[in-house]
Amino acid sequence: MAPTSLMILRPLRRDEWRAFRDHLLRLDPDDRTMRFCHAVNDVFVREHCERAKRSGSLVIACFVDDELRGAAEVTPLDGVWPLTAELAMSVEAAYQGQGVGTELLQSTLLAARNRCVAAVNVTCLLDNGRMLHLTRRLGARIVVHHTAPPAQTPPPWRSELTRVERAAQDGKAVFQARFQFPVAQAQLHAG
Image (cartoon, rainbow, N blue to C red; front, side):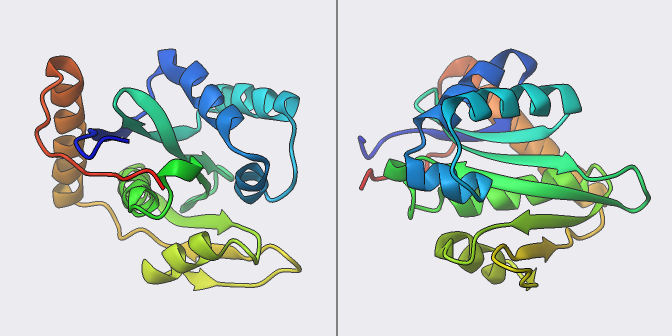
């Protein structure tokens, strides 16, 4: 990938669910297993995307040069106050290890916080070192259950500052998408 590639993180729009599905279908078998905590086929991925779309899941997407290359999906677990949600992330192999996951997780926690989510559970396999490292670095409490430990990350409570921060991120993404002018560039190097 060119060193001048533009990375934009923003919520997935209703008309972009196909891009999310295509991203998940592009994941190699190991990355799919890490994302879903077990081996899955194309049919499962397509059905998952339809369920997520119907359930109102929030997806923060990472677009690199207008192609969705990473995504974090937040799905509310119940309607009980305070809200708890489950988070799952995926980053295509060529973009891993370059900060995409960190940016996705931070942006997604901010969005969850502004939706009054008190706790975010991340379930991952014990051998998913990248996700365990990332969640630990951001202050998650790791609890091991059999082979899949859910990492719980309570986003700080929303405030006017977090709303302004999210609005600024969304505004930046709209501006970049509309004018194709890099307000801020993140340089990614394909491995």
